[in-house]
Image (cartoon, rainbow, N blue to C red; front, side, top):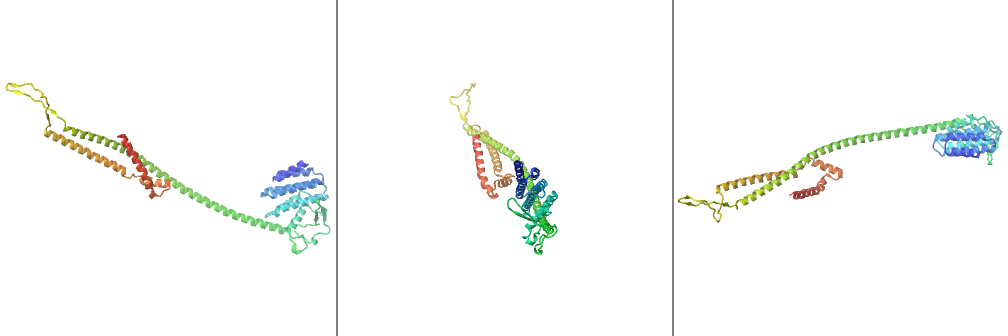
Length: 397
């Protein structure tokens, strides 16, 4: 028996309404003595205490119904006229009210639960009151000022609880009539239910208003997020187009760099050829010619002989002038060609590329640098690159 009661208390403490119902029913079915009724009452109060601490309305309702079922079953298994039955039923009804009446609209819920309790048992006390009447009496006592002595009938019944508490039960408790004979304190159960319904309606109206405002705020947030997503999509598309244009321009720059490199190579070849021509011109005035001298006699020519010392003579003046003029013209043409190549290379090095402004804009956006300060950051980098190119040229030479 103690194990079953412990199980019932544990299930009720965990908030399980259906499990608590089964446990209470088993406890009530095994109850054959008045002390078991007290244990059932303690189980019911424990369940309702834990259920009242929870905000789950369903759990509170299930726990209250479990307690009502346990009381009804226990009352049927014991003597209908045993005062302990009515004390236990009344105490449990008081616990129901204590747990439920502290919340908005729970007064009407308590009335419904007490209807279930009254319908589930036919036990009545000597005054003819059912557990439902006992619960309503406690409900009205909590809702109204204390009753006067005139409100207690003469044939009322007084029960003594095991812990020494006395319980006064009136002889009658009409549902739709006032309990007190004092008009100043008369309030019907209908008025209580009407007040509870009004409280529930006001609570529902407030919840509906809050729901509408929350829904509108959520719609506004969704629309704002949608606009932000559209703006972000447009920006991503624009950035993609810019990157594509930048890539195409970079692809055009690569052949230009190769062309510049080829021009530098050609320029070095031209310089080497010019140096060779200049050396040839210098050597041209130093080259001597060996002349052949022949002896003639009266009898006729004799065999030629070479003089001991060769005669160094200059070439023919006309031919030398012509050769010098041709060499000078060639040198001048090569110098002109060299200057043209230098101008082209200089133009390619100093002329801004088509994507220079776009590169500055992308650099400013990525590095979070003002556009007017980009040159200050790029110029040192360009100087370093030029130094690297010069070093590479010297290495090639």
